[in-house]
Image (cartoon, rainbow, N blue to C red; front, side):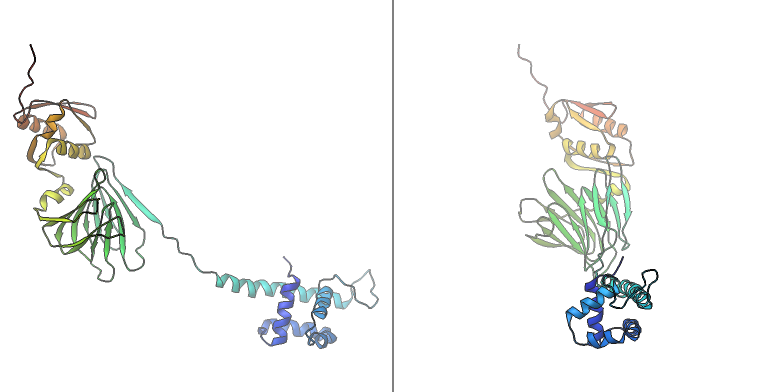
Length: 336
C-alpha cells in the first residue's frame, strides 16, 4: 500500500516545523542531499511546490531534463527509494501511534449455572465464595468481579457462603430483593410465581433491600437466625426469627415439611424428585403436614404421607396421583 500525497505533505510539514522524528529527518535529509534545490523551494511553505515535489516523487511528472526512456535517471532511482522508505516509515510510526491511541475494550463474559428438577449444583466463584444451587434454579455471575462490588443474579434457591472482602460487598439480586453482604452465610429463595424472596441469615450480617435489582424501596438489617420476606409489590419487608435448619438443610438432602400445606409439600417433592403431582380432590392440598426426611427416596416419602394423611398415592412414571379423604375430611354425600 502506497503513501498518499496528504501523508507525504504531513511528513514535510513536520520536517519544516522541526517536529520530525530522527528517523524521519534522516530520510528527508538524504533526499534533499540528492535534490538540493527542493529544500530551498520547500522552505517557502508553498503548497504548489509541495504538490510538484510529490508529483516528482510519485513518478507522475517527468523531470524537465531530457530522459533516456530506455533507462531511468539517477533522480528517479533515488526518488523511488525515498518514496519506499517514507511509505515504510509511515506504517511503522504513524500506524503504530494510531493503534496505541485506540482504547482497550475489556469484554467481561457472564456465566450461567442452571439446575433441573431433582438436581443440585455446587459452585465456587472466583473470589472463593461457595454457592449451592438448589433444584430448578439459575445463577448468573461474571468470570471476574471487577469494580467495587461482587454481584450475582438468582432465580430459584441457593445457599451462599461468601468470602470476606470489606472493599467489595457481595450482592445477590432477585426479582424482588437485593441482599448485600461483606462475608457471611445465608440462604436466598426466590419464588417467581408470586415474586416473593426469602432471605435467611445463618451467620454474619446482611442488608436486605426491596425493589427490582438496583432500585431499592425498603431496607432492613438481618441478624443471625432471622429471616426477611420481600414481596414484589414494594410492600414493607417482613422479618422474623426462625430455626435456620428448616431453610438450609436442603443442601444436605434433608427435607422439612414444617407445618406446611400438602400443596406446598407437593411443590417441594416436584422440585426435589422431578415429578408432577395431581390431586384427585383439590381440597386435599389444604391439609397440613409436619415431617422431616433425611436422604429418603420418593416412594418411602409417599408411603409416609399415605399413613399420616390417610390417602393413597399412585405413581406412574413421573406422575403421582394423590387421592382420599385425608385430614379428617368428611366423605362426600350422595343424594338419593
